[in-house]
Image 1: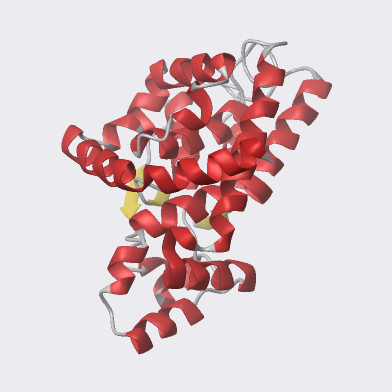
Image 2: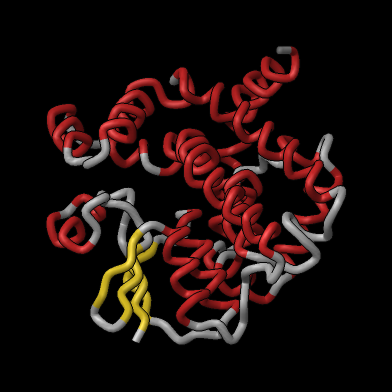
Length: 267
């Protein structure tokens, strides 16, 4: 039995759900409310000491960290493989997965967190808000979220996040000049792990970060969106009324994101 502790707007949870869909696996969802900080409640920290989603529970064992979960499922259910047969391409797949974990995911969190998580926290008294943030287990994430609560999209982290997004997209464009997919001519875990971070841009209407200058990346993401697994695992969680709301919110702050983008292009 597979159980997944998840949240619809978490890119990490989205990529695990894509793998589940690609493999046609049955699973049970447990919704964890990130705006309400259920991920920092004692019951969840006992399951996942890092206090993040997703967490996969399989045969009574908790598997944490989304990239590890993706490889775990590919190894455990190998009938539909999402790893390249070529060993060099497999090494490139793991390079991209690590890049997502180390650089792109924190950058995505930096630009999404003020939009999705901050408003609910700002409704709380300052002392309660501070106490919640102090429960975040990892110091770098804790300190970053404190800055994002205090400054929102004016936090110094945001400009660097936009820069990381652009450099990632530029590197993807180069890779896609050689292959149909990011590391070869077959859809792999590299594509699985990257695609949700474009969902974040699309849901806020910030597609100019890639569709102005990077036609191969634009085509790649369109092909990801056409896959049945993506529709089932990601798109179906964004009904039209939610997308309208998110795009309105994204349009309101786009001038600030564009300002950071223009600064990086000028630099």
